[in-house]
Image (cartoon, rainbow, N blue to C red; front, top):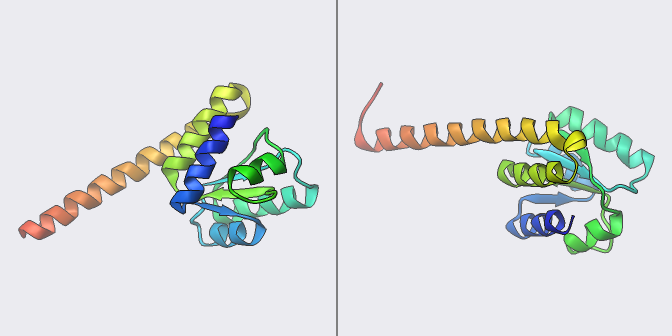
Length: 140
């Protein structure tokens, strides 16, 4: 679990993580969120809101085996019940590490995020080729 929490801290430093209910809700409504994470001891109202945010933002939701205090320490706060990872690469890495902890609970999540990451990489590569063709003056 420590490796997952350190990865979340790294995502926070990179600016690819939203913490707290309001920023997570805004990221989900803007469809920037890729993965919503909930603390294991989050309140039922928080769980209900997170499910709503995941539905609205069409992102994945996972409840991780860390409490609010541990999650908060990882991202530089006193406590944190809800996080949103906005980068698909970080989201995929977190999901893979969660799947390594418990394959039955997080395996499907990791598979979905790896597919999304592959699609994002393909779109990025296609955009790179397109920009290169524009610089050289080629057209399709």
